[in-house]
Length: 284
Image 1: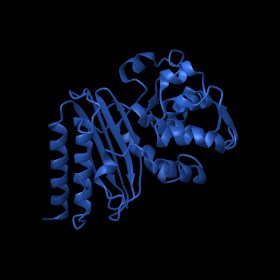
Image 2: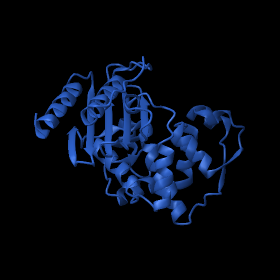
Image 3: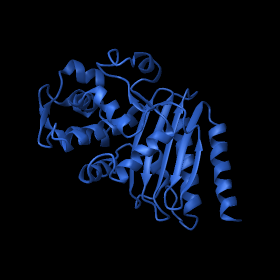
Image 4: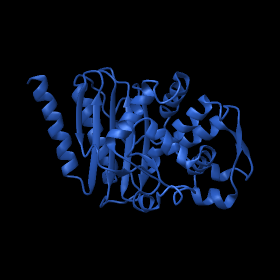
């Protein structure tokens, strides 16, 4: 089998997974080591759920670069009424508890803490997150939920997509810009990669890749939607895989949710295609 035929087989297998899915599924794969790309609905808009938190992190870091924020700055935990609504580990912090900026970032990215997300969104400004994304050429990726959504004309989109919207291709480009040191200063991009590599929620793309391989990724989940966006430092060469679903028939909050299962299936296909001699398989 030639290399082109081999890639065509991978493309067919991934397409079959997408077509068999109970809902709408889109993905974008870019193996940067060999330049190969495969995509399905790459430019279609999907709800981001928590994957938009990567953009909030990027805006925070760019404001630190610009001196608008400082790494040592502290911000208080919000009132209990707010943290109860938003959820997350910081729900248990007494209102007014000051946390340094790096700890809020760690909570938002590694634990996907929603209260930390709200705190940082207010610190940097919803409109500034979208301006930062636009500055990177990511015009279809937007933070939609926030106190400025009406002022910014985002209410109709927020009602449709929730926290944010993006495309599989754009979120892949965002991860690549962080990896390449173009999303902010080299030091800021390095810090972002380290945070993305410390994920608590790792039952999607990462579940089908050996734990010895570093993966910088961010997951997302809401009713009827699952997503994972990953930069994989693979032995065969670095690759980016972003997967989004919407309008899922299966809205269960279980490990075998069809969306999570489909993301794992795609990750497994990609990993095994580029690493056919690897004997590792996920333990039962």
